[in-house]
Image (cartoon, rainbow, N blue to C red; front, side, top):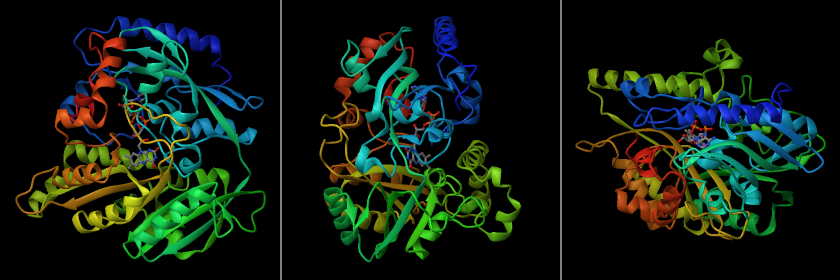
Length: 461
Ligand SMILES: Cc1cc2nc3c(=O)[nH]c(=O)nc-3n(C[C@H](O)[C@H](O)[C@H](O)COP(=O)(O)OP(=O)(O)OC[C@H]3O[C@@H](n4cnc5c(N)ncnc54)[C@H](O)[C@@H]3O)c2cc1C
């Protein structure tokens, strides 16, 4: 939130303090951020998690200023989108892309890529950043923009996952909002028809006369898919609220039309972590009534999963009951829209998890970003799937994830790196532009104080 105590002056003092702390960091000890929340889905073991030292970046979790006149904001790198939107919405403004989970931070979404239902219109969060203040791996604090001497770092920062440096503040563009979002949920009986509708919306900006300020979708089965088209609105004949007993993803199947306040729209997926609150029982009416509203949040569920992974609770129960071990298949992938139906068919046959989130996107600008080379002008669909599936007899962890990686490559797609990856190093750097990455690493972290991208994202260090 906009914190009056955090002036630009105190920010500068905190930058100087952090720079000193970084310089004094013992050589050889891996540097990590000490943050109270995370949305990564790579869990280190108990020993590693306990041993990891953390750089205190709590001073960078505030909005420094919102300027309604220029429709921009300057924001600390560790500020959550929840706090950021709390600061911009009173000015009837929002960031151009607001990832759906409240504790995703602006720095995390830029270095790790984010996406949401405005991404067909406005691209990815990093495309509305105009300046990055970065503590580089070699200990400098620099300001990178698209046209200064650090332009290559500016363009190479997205998908670098904190391996080139940490962003301490960002300047971003904002866009005006209306008080409500008018949703229409359109059903489709085949993946092909659904992908065709996405292409049509990308070309026309609306569907059946309904303006597509927002667009995402939910696939429950190959013959049951929905696109949700949202239009800004000044009026709302009724207002739904999915932070109480009603569950948003279930409404997509049931209702043709809906109205939400802009704030409730932005966080519609957070209350039930899309549908991933199901294993905790929170979707059962009885449990939901008893589960305090303030704990119906994605960061609470994620902490529960982290505990489970850390102490291998589910895995031990499966062993004891002689049940097959399960593999976590938690990924977001981007597939060109014309191959989207093919991907859904592959996924249903080989992984078989449902629902699947669908979020169309197109780069806002006309240049590719080197470390995540989506093609300018091309419409992609982000498919998000988050759950576990039983491993076939004789197969080890990574079996399904590897199938997904191969299929994404075959279809000309890309895979986000916030979760597990299994690529060999050569293949990884072919896909994620090793040449550009290595040049940036030499230029901004020559001594390798921060981990490399492959070590961090694939080897899980
Ligand atoms: C189930 C699930 C669903 C998801 N769905 C979506 C979605 O719908 N939309 C979406 O946009 N994203 C989604 N994500 C991905 C999420 O946006 C990324 O994981 C993002 O990187 C998380 O940001 P964070 O702020 O929580 O960062 P963290 O989890 O704390 O860190 C992520 C990485 O970024 C680095 N990092 C963090 N802050 C900075 C900084 N200031 N400067 C440099 N490096 C930094 C960290 O070192 C780390 O490597 C999803 C993730 C999960 C697990």
